[in-house]
Length: 102
Image (cartoon, rainbow, N blue to C red; front, side, top):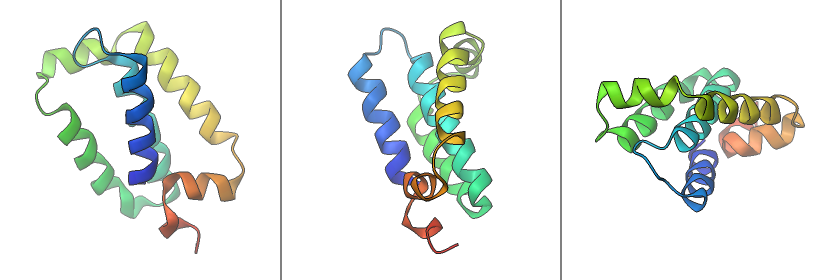
């Protein structure tokens, strides 16, 4: 899962961050984390900790504002749809090699 979240982070950083937290960045990592946690619930705690580490400097209000934005919702829905329609083997690779054996 770390590889998927790192990819999401890199893509969001390339897109640029005009506000903190960047709603698109936050949506991409949270959608990926949620998807991977559904494939392997054992990854949920690690994924949630990763998201918390990335957003640790943001206030509760800043995170709430980002999550309520149209930009967040659109990015979250797009990533969720892409992952849901992915080939199961590709999805397992996205979430980490530990899922491939399942």
